[in-house]
Image (cartoon, rainbow, N blue to C red; front, side):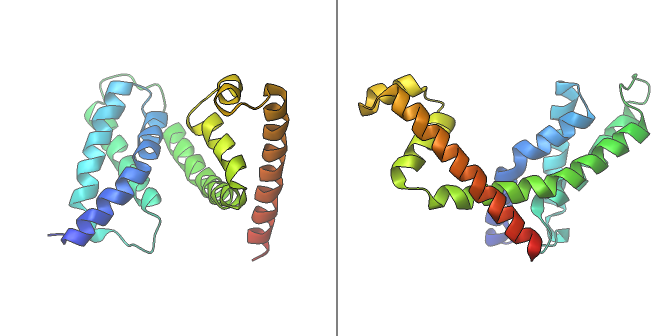
Length: 175
C-alpha cells in the first residue's frame, strides 16, 4: 500500500502528464471514445503498479509505456473491429513518439528557464498573450500602451526567447 507521500507524489506527477498520456493514446487509437476508455484503464494500471515505478526514470515515459500496453490489450480484445492502423504501424508511431519526446521536453525546460530570465513586464506580456490568450488590442487597452509598440515589443521578446533557447540547447548538447 503506497504511503501518503507516495500517493501525493503520484497524483502530482500524473496530473502533470495526463494530457500527454491521453494524446499519446489518441495517436494510437484515433477513436476518441476508445482512447478515453484506454486512458481510464491506464490511470488505474498506473496506480496499481505505483510500487513498481522507478523514480529515477521519467514518469511520463513510464506512463506512456503502460498506456502502450493498454492500447495493445484493447486492440486484442477488439480484434473483430477493423483497425485503421496495423500493429507494425502502431509500433512505428510509438517508437517515433518516444524518440521525439526527449528533445521536446528539453526545449520546454529551456523555454521555462528563458522565460524566468525575462523582465517582469515582458513576462507579463507573454503570459497575457499566450497563457491567457489575450489579444494585443485588449492588452493595449488594459495597459494604456500603443498597439504597434506592443507588437514590436512582442517580436523582440520572441527573438530573445528563441536565442536563449538555442543557446541553452547548444550548452546542454555540449555537456
